[in-house]
Image (cartoon, rainbow, N blue to C red; front, top):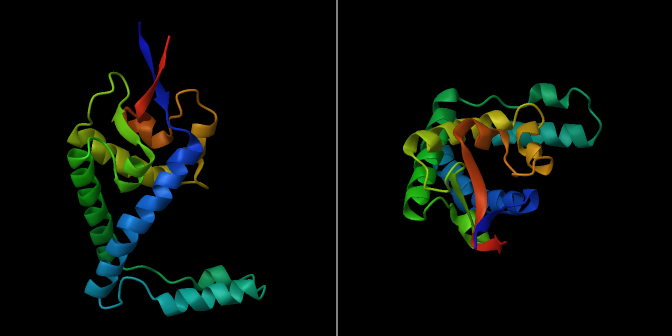
Length: 166
């Protein structure tokens, strides 16, 4: 009797990502914002641009605030560090993935990720957003449900408890 891995669906991965944004990215973003004394991003300028866009001003996006790259890099470094800690502590799962019973593993043998894979996957995650989040939407069309960042890092997102038995 052999068992086949069940890959996490696009929707499961999306929900896990949204949960991780609320649990990890928002608090880290708030911390970096206060550490930068508001220099990381001008939220007032961002809010004004959004209001202009809502009123039909086609040039609203031209006035979007620029981020200070020093603080942006600090945010990204802290996010990568926190993700590495969670993946090491929870065997390939961030809080959102843990809540949904999914984890990130090495694609070829379902073993835990190496630090190199974690870093490549995180950088690949940023690349997956360009252009128009296409790297994420690949999950919808692939049988193995792998996104661009999974392909780059040699990883897959699977269910931790459910397996098909054949």
